[in-house]
Length: 186
Ligand code: SF4
Ligand code: SF4
Image (cartoon, rainbow, N blue to C red):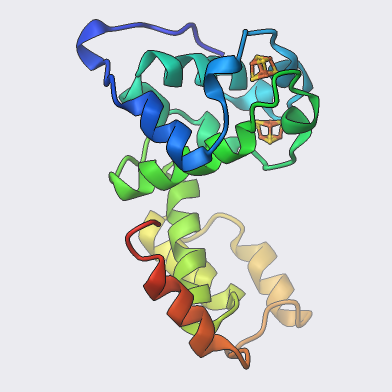
């Protein structure tokens, strides 16, 4: 965990409003009780705790929020949402922040996760579902990390856990149309 460093020149006054609109949740109600962070199963790995992210959004610290590891490490488990006494939907906030980070090309500290996210979506867009082997190979090439988990991958392939060829679902055209319709939003 890090302390929030409030650098005046990095404040974006419109940031909080934009996140509020995208997440459609009452961010201003947060009174920093810390319940979300104390309940979060992955808080130990985050650079900023969930309650800190909410405070940073309120303060307009756009750059620090969009480049934080927290928005990518959030496991979307909804524990914080269930426990927040002020009904702040932190999960939707995290979703909105991830969308903004991708839209603004902010890869931050979790480059592998953002690359995985994009590769996964490419696969779903093309086939209507994920194609694990193709996705893994593309991810390896993009991250230039060819050998990590190579043995595990070969074992999975030999056991038939990874399919050699991709399959397309019946509604793949409809999935593609959804991607086209939401192009400007994602
Ligand atoms: S649980 Fe809700 S009110 Fe408490 S710090 Fe988290 S977001 Fe704020
Ligand atoms: S939804 Fe994300 S931030 Fe909230 S408790 Fe789960 S992992 Fe933590």
